[in-house]
Image (cartoon, helix red, strand yellow):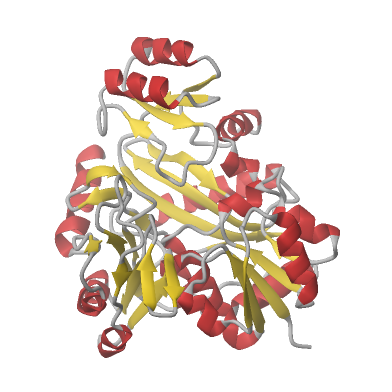
Length: 430
């Protein structure tokens, strides 16, 4: 029997998911934007808001979906998995209550304490903004200031790095979030481990390092992610095997405490002088990290979905021994004042000429006369290679696909940047 899979979401992450599924199933998709990469792979594409559970359920029934994959956190927060389950469609993603591990950062930290999940920082949660500001003043050290709800990866402010304590307090008073979490600032190197989860089982994927800051040299405001890299083995050059195993142990402890969790569990970790600490959890693939992970996954993704749905053991995951480097092309002015509605040219043939290069469309709008930017990231190029350096060279070559009006962080994956990470960890560990 051929499975009919509905993919929810229209970003770069979902384009990577579509590419990993399209050859093995009848793929349909729905999203608020018509992603040209997904549209080319899918049997059908419906324009719907990713948080409109009723419309998504209607489309799933219309195409007779036997499985669904939920990409964006907005859909998880809106209970799309629950709604699909109610009409008999198995959706690979956590139910709304379990998705709180991402969608409610106050819940996330309380959950870690109550279930003895290792790596939790000192923290306090506040509804009273003035009380939060007083806590920032009295805390002996730097802090991370986090809105409790979803902010697209752009809401966190870190004192001693991005802002002063006075600027952090001004930020809270200006934004007037309903609830905030103030927590200890970790110092080290960030990395991500994503895992497929279902039926109490955890299947981890290789570690990835994302780059949130907008400009080269890790300068500028936070973004949704300007690019990322992974190595040909499961850990990164500034890590060792034990660091990776420690991160996986944390993910397994989360799943032990959330036995009905299913989908992708994403751990954003900080490797510190004292070991692995948890920056946050997400309840879905990362964007861009999915574009590092899925192209080197040799086990059919569909096999994972079917095993999860049928309550069978998840397959052991096999990954090609290949490094990846992902670099995003973003509109001019992104993230603070992005130029939306600008017509752009994407030279897809230049990616093919680069050899082991892949192109993933993200937040672009396809119209009759071409592609137009939105206020978010436009597309990503991923280079594959035996080493990070080789993958970076492929990505850099393929980035000739980006025409005028787009900006790129060219330093991601370069030898200089990777070596700086290695040196930093060596200094921290003495």
